[in-house]
Length: 98
Image (spheres, helix red, strand yellow):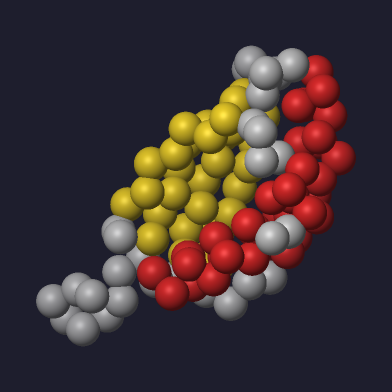
């Protein structure tokens, strides 16, 4: 919580790093639904996953209203189709605000 009593936003940014074309296909197959479900979550301020110049690497930018909203997102993703399908794909994330 901030000094003014407002909640601290949680920001995640980093990279989703595929190993090969199979990983890329998994991301492409599941990403649109993952983005739509995440953006519909209570407390999601913004959520973007975009390809980079390297076809194996995706830029990830997430912003949630507070730690509770971020935790709810993480819990949902852990048991989601996206979470299961992409579990083996490397994530290089930094989380700010926790």
